[in-house]
Image (cartoon, rainbow, N blue to C red; front, side, top):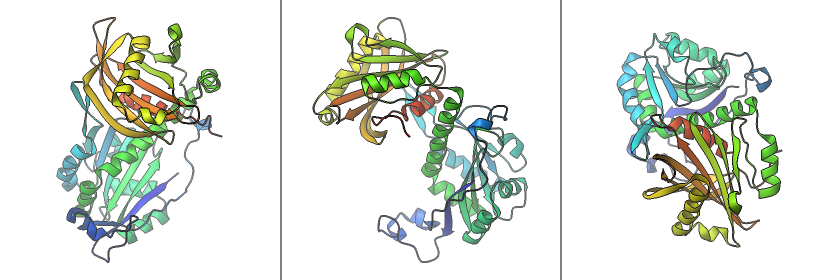
Length: 376
């Protein structure tokens, strides 16, 4: 499947009204100098490899955090290097920062190396005539390429371009300055495209490898939540000593998904009380993990899980059972219908290893958490 995400036109023409009712003139000058969004077009082409056909198909190597950027012009390298910092910001895991992605930049003659990555960003100047542009034209339908040419540029997603569980994002503009403007103005948009696709591809692979359907059905019937549980995860604890919670674990390294719940007629009220939420997470840590959490490390934010607004807490934990600790991320998810507040916790213990890739996978699993049951 080929999807044309956005077609761009240099903002020298009359600026269109944007979705929020403002005009592009209301935006910062930096954005106005180059782009105004003029449309969102979805093109459905030949379907990629389906799940039934994935066995035996070449799979892209490496991590979902690896990104290759292929340049059609070496002159793009300075702008690309500046882009990387905004596209792949640092994330703090307790005391160690990690970048969101591991990015490698390849010149016009190095496309073959870039094609082996799970995530590929191709920067294409129209008319460059080299292998990067030729490959982009092979991946995009003829009609889509004509639309890009007439519009002066665009961003296209191509799932499974050369291997399964892979994504190519092709950014096209008329000249190097146009490409530089897209990079300067769209790091968050491009980051979101890759991360959304990463989540979809991780879940696609997990479903292909198999799920713990029995546990999923049991938890839905008994505890009121639905979660797709990968085959590698095992139930490690279930309501120990009467504590209302459970723990799923896998090893090498140790990664856990813990879920506890607290019955209350007003679960939404708990989301306004940080002390109550910390108390619930601390109680989970004592009952399931033999740990204590570190208040100085807390970072709070709002989030959305299974279409339910919730509160997210990140921080550090220290074991009370051994000398060690690490990062955790947890979500407080209200269930107004049942009168319950869930605390869903993701935990990684991987000394000496980067944590980002493990949390990316755990958060993909978390995205299947639902209070409405299995999707039909």
